[in-house]
Amino acid sequence: MLDAPNVNDLGPFWMPFTANRQFKSAPRMFVAAEGMHYTTSEGRKVVDGTAGLWCVNAGHGNPKITQAIQKQAAEMDYAPAFQMGHPKAFELASRLVSMMPGDLDHVFYTNSGSESVDTALKIALAYHRARGDASRTRLIGRERGYHGVGFGGISVGGIVNNRRFFGSLLAGVDHMRHTHLPEKNAFSRGQPEHGAELADDLERIVALHGAETIAAVIVEPMAGSTGVLMPPKGYLERLRAICDKHGILLIFDEVITGFGRLGSPFAVDHFGVMPDLVTAAKGLTNGAVPMGCVFARKHIYDAFMTGPEGAIELFHGYTYSGHPLACAAGLATMDVYRDEGLFERCAEMAPYWEEAVHSLKGARHVIDLRNMGLIAGIELEPREGKPTARAFEAFLKCYDRGVLIRTTGDIIALSPPLIIEKEHIDIIFSTIRDVLNELD
Image (tube, rainbow, N blue to C red; front, top):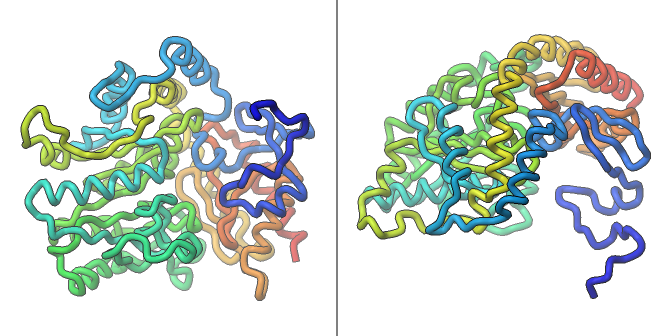
């Protein structure tokens, strides 16, 4: 039956990462969005404190992006990327690599952060095989890491509930220690002082398995979805040196940190550490059309370009790789970032944001605060025997008061659009303070 139902039944949609029964008993519906605000089905304005899901960096409904998508849909809706191309895919790739440092000069298109991670892992494995080093099949992630929901990303990720329901996943995966040291680094501003030595945990794994078995290490330069965990000073540099020592590829998962979130184009720039592969998504199209990508350094790409000229070099790709609408959205988004100076604006607003974050020190239930760029983590003391309950109640109360926050465990994570004004920052943090004062 193709007839539309008369009633908007909430039952059929199995919602992702959602308490479905709770939501459907008291739905929270957005029906419009513009600039810094969503509009609910009741007509209320809600300040977006999370840029959607870390992705709407240029604010909602930017007319340049909207018009670019509309124009492309009318001109050409779809074109295959297998053995064919269209101009905007190549134009966007050139624009993207122009903002990357060093020789990160090739782009492989995906449709999401999860696909970007799985693509980067496959490229790493195939790279070693192409060089005649096929024994390097082991992938190393990190505890409390989040790398999407593909089987590869779950395997190298370190979130227990993402893993426990799905079996053993990929074989040969190991994990380094996480970098969260609240006993030493609580209430840090920016990068914490302590913990660079945690990178040496990779040496333990090398000693256990042998460097000749390890293909790649993947980390988030700043871990977002596991609670906004900042890299200690010197940690990423040390990790890069160990990877170089043992011939291991280093992958930065920049799905969250890419496109201005830290006040620099990418965390690669912000921390001055050069990985071999970089994953991206989210801010690539401002969330308007699903798209992701993997940046690869020249030596990675060149390793594949050695066989017969007519042969396929990498047996991997997606039906929607480099989708015309996504490329149009991406090009327009890059224009908006440049023309409105949003990366620079993030850097300018970051000090005011930092002061607002740390104004919550001493607020009820707050046990730690973390910030960098326009990101914040507000860690709450969990209720005894009821982990996550206090933060989720804060989420509901903030929504009722017109502010959208995100929670992960008992941590409030904030990542607003880069167009945010000081008045929005004041609203977000005063609302959170008031809500925390009301919670048990």
